[in-house]
Image (cartoon, rainbow, N blue to C red; front, top):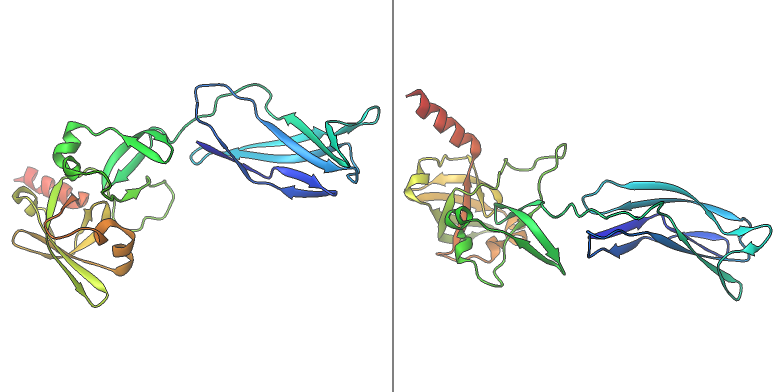
Length: 265
């Protein structure tokens, strides 16, 4: 977890300089104190400085502190260590040792459209646990080292939704049967298992490797989609070939409607 310290100030020649910084916290089970180091010159006119210190991680709420940092007293002068006319002082800004939370652990991440739980994050490596059900339903049982997958963080309530609602509950895999570049766009055709064909609806949404797309045409054995250049370049659709497998998630609304109609029979 990286903590970003915002509005941490340094005094140079009487001027306050904002210094964003990061702390890498590897062990979130231990207790920590947080210190700041301030430097100033003899030109600074006051015995103290007020700082607004904000501390946050990617998923934590921001902790805001208004601190009165003492730099000198009338009786003893400047505190800290002197280097010519520059003084450096180290001050603790935590009232008591505390633990840093690691809220990213346990986060749901869509990996090629499959909702997985992050269980470890070290040195840019993310670790997920895949259940037997996930392996059976998805293409992950065929995944190889260095394969490229699409990643998407979970939707936050109150944010804009672009595309349809994808749950990350993959229904099955589909096989690429055709890829054509037409003008600047790309046409893809996929074959799906027979049990999923009844859920395909022209102009309905479908999730392919976690990408919200629209079925342009229902085929005898599957469906057809068109992909714009931006989507093609920003996803692993640019890396797949004919006969490759993709994860598909049928539009949740079409499944609910079909189940409702079946129950009415």
